[in-house]
Amino acid sequence: MIEALIYKDIKLLFKDNTLLLVGQFLLVLIIISANLGIAGYSLLSVGICWTFLMNVSSKEKAAKGNILLLSTPYRKQQLIMAKYLTAYLLYISTTLFYFAMSEIFRMIHVELFPQISCDVFFITLLSVSLFVGITLPMYLKLDDSIIKIVSSIMILGTFIIGYVVLKQLSAQAILELMNWTNKYLGLLSISISILAVIVSYIISFTLMSKTEY
Image (cartoon, rainbow, N blue to C red; front, top):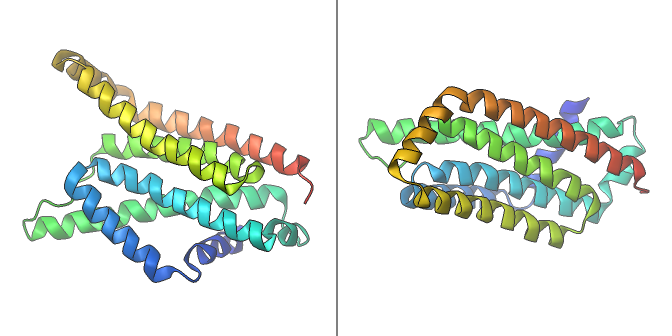
């Protein structure tokens, strides 16, 4: 039953603007990857989740989708869980697409899409989990315009802060940080990601339970 909700969310995302979304996806992917290297993959992964949440949020609120769905056998837990699963499905699809493009360009000896390392994958997984975990509860309670501002600041602010911090660190500090993250990054990223989703799910369910539709 939850598969139908995921299909509904993806259908809403591409409804009436499929070509535009695909075009933007490819253009942003090429531009960011060419200028920012592997950081483009991380930004794009979070960005596609942002596009999904904003599109589905505005369309569902305009059509009062939650009211209609709650009048069906769907439970609130399923409605919330479908959003998380759809976001992760889009992230996995983005990763596979980026990996495919990286391999294609590598075979023709064009270094446009740097290959994804395990460290980059784990960092991006953590970024997506934190972003979705923070944004989804807001989607249930706040106006879309506020969510767009807050989420945009989150995406750009996190990237800028990380860039500035790395610039300020000495080569020795960066080397020590890399050695530490090589040992614990995967475990730490997965643990924090799971914790973020669990806390976010509890908050989202509480907010939906207290909201009168």
